[in-house]
Length: 70
Image (cartoon, one colour):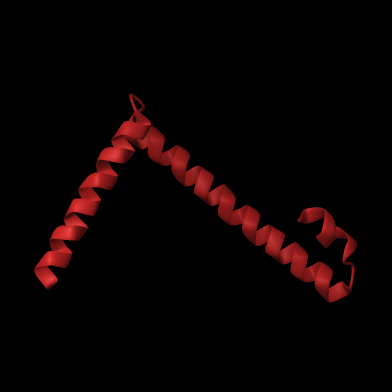
């Protein structure tokens, strides 16, 4: 059973690697990686800032901003 999971994981890794290569096309791997990591970091920051602002607005009772942000 464990060997089957390892084979499935290896096949999944291989498939994901091929998809990533197809997506990036002729772009250098490092440039593509930097671009994707930058987008993920931006999303992380945006979600955390939104959560922080929403929590602050809930705490202060100002629900008008929450309606606009949805």
